[in-house]
Length: 211
Image (cartoon, rainbow, N blue to C red; front, top):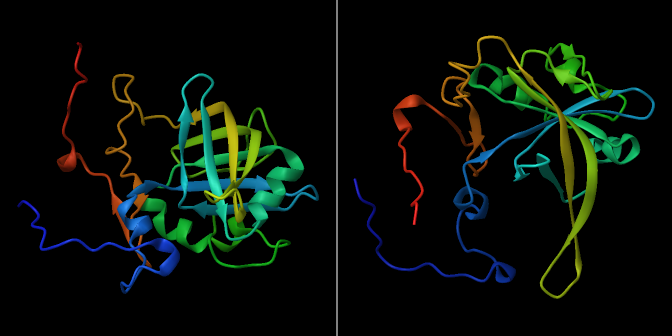
């Protein structure tokens, strides 16, 4: 079915959107979930999902996530230690991921709250989610505080990390190929509680033009 458009809704974000819910993060989505594992300098493990997350470079592989509104525990841990992990959220792990975003104190571990086993990393000290079929070990490359178009700093920080280790569970690859649909990858879709799952029936292919 083709969408129909009855008329434009225009707004300047600085003046508000005039809608029941801000559409911005639903329009820019669905997005991969940055399920970030870290450990404090005192040794307390932390796990938190970030909905502003993506990949930014092939060689070396670099990923990043934004700590929006404040410097959260993950940000503080990574700033202290220079390390973090990224862990794939599948449909099977979605409820545990959601539990790990609960606002608990820095001396408590979301791994314990979500009843998730920690997986050991090989290159860094930050823990992985043992049940996640894919994990990245990352070393901090840069932290950038965002600004508006006038150059004024806003309370959001993007944490970039180089992927220095990749864990792929046995049975994930089929003929050496990784397929996110087979993993039932979960994506954040905006709104107060919306997510999507990647499934094989939604797949289509387009090859890039050669000339």
